[in-house]
Image (cartoon, rainbow, N blue to C red; front, side, top):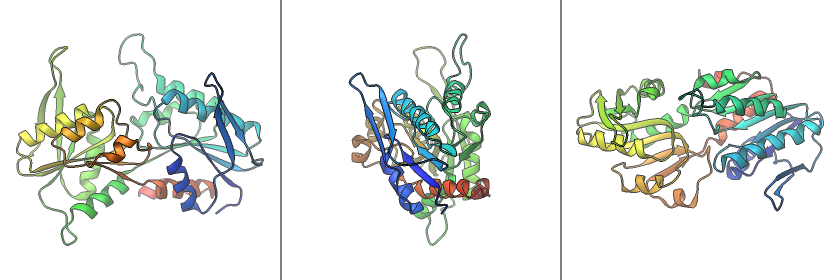
Length: 319
């Protein structure tokens, strides 16, 4: 490992930052991150970073505004401390769903956040499973968008394979049309069938109508998505699959946002399990839920950071 590599952990996901540091075999840099009485964020780097290759590990998850400001201020502190290069490691990129004008006179906040990170002084961004791939084009600096698929596929094989082979009645399901590319990629890796949930709301105030494109009858179904927020769509999709004759329904996602009553919905649903990565730190409710599991992406992020520090290919991780 290059001796001039520095890892700086924000407060958003300390367990992930410590796991990355452990995998890389280097300590986290000493910092002081605190709030003033009016909740202004103050960041101080407590060791020399002049000429160093600095990586700031900070998912911009809940509370999104606070974690984003902390990321920006940390980048600014490193820039003013003469770090040679600053990489924003943002496993979960908040505001990613606001990637286009969905209604008249609405913002494209994903682009605004990209501008803020760039202007703050970041030289590159390392993220994972962006909600929309075009967000990479919102930046004028290099962006490495990692994929959690290898981690998810490995876990599916470990948990569902019988004598080294996956069951022939396995179907990967996209919970909406927008996630078809992701689901198809996973289905191809697993040599499994593909199904798609077509959801539509006939009129305001009425529940969504679910149509299943593909066969769910007598199948073990796995719903695949990039994130689970309120879990409403996920639980409705799982129920639709069971109503269509599925044997079991589980779910895999990269980012477990789990806001509002998401954990309660999952607990009460027909889902056998919901598995996500630790891109977002687990809350007490998530940890206590028997149906929720987290997979570590620390080894994947650590390898990507090492490759960036050594000027090696990151895309070859997925080829």
